[in-house]
Amino acid sequence: MLSDVPPERIRLRVKLGTEEFEAVGPAEVVASHFRTWQALVGKVPADPAPQPPAVAPAERSLHGEVSPELFAIDTQRKLVRLRHYPDGKHPHADAALLLLYGFHCSFDGDGRAVPVTRLRAALTASGHTDARVDRTLEPYRAAGLVKKRGQRKGSTYQLTPGGRQRAAALANALAQSLSGRGAPT
Image (cartoon, rainbow, N blue to C red):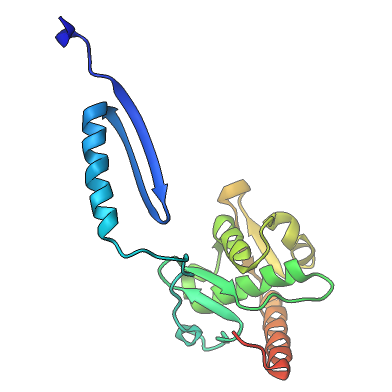
């Protein structure tokens, strides 16, 4: 009889907005779990547009140096995002330097050496979507403003004292240019 045959196993993966369902197993079990998931998701209020991550005011900085007009700080994800992207001769390198400064000021010990994966996420969230952090920061690394430790995804970047001064000067110049324009955040 068919009782010796193992039940058919299926894999189902569904994503609706921010909600996800994934299951592997016998078809009837997966179908049952999927119906339950659908009922639960149906009770969640619909979110018409994805919301940006919740950010704490930048005044949360332990050093009091981070401007809320320049940085959005997501304390849950430990992520810093630029509210306004710099322009100039090296905008991506300047953005990366500013982000390192934002991490340094906002997360104290955790912001000293920033993992490359977190810095890349911050650059992407700030508007530099095809960021190669090593290439982006090379001019400042060569100038001694940034230290790199490790290799590939395990590497970290950290501002040197000269890098902190340069980043503070960039932040002040960007804040002044924004206050002169009356730009919204």
